[in-house]
Length: 135
Image (tube, rainbow, N blue to C red; front, side):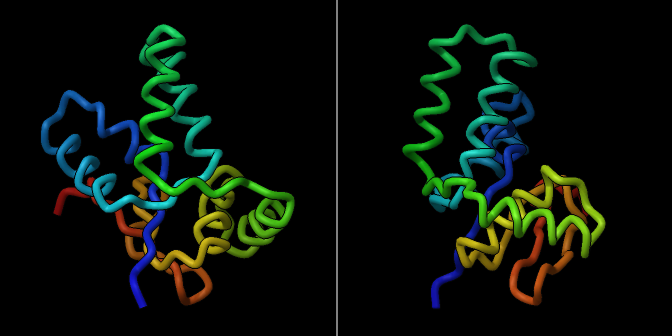
């Protein structure tokens, strides 16, 4: 069985980072064509427009490039319900649990994120890996 990976929003953001190590790490993950959710695309757009202050056309171009480089999972009512359950069981915030739920629903076994505990496992089948952690 081929490993399926899911990338959190920070991976997409770091692909544009000024820090060459973070950028290279993020681009390496994106080269693997990870799964992302519609939440990731929308959070990415928000960061580009609000924090990075890109104009709308440039932000949309980058978001479309991200969607073309990844497989996109829609956040459905079932995934939202799963996220609520995960948030209660693991005591994590809703937005993080929504990422976890989308990754689980897509049968991923690795979630690249710096927002959750490195090495944490969800439901015995999804492991968080922080690719930006300094050892």
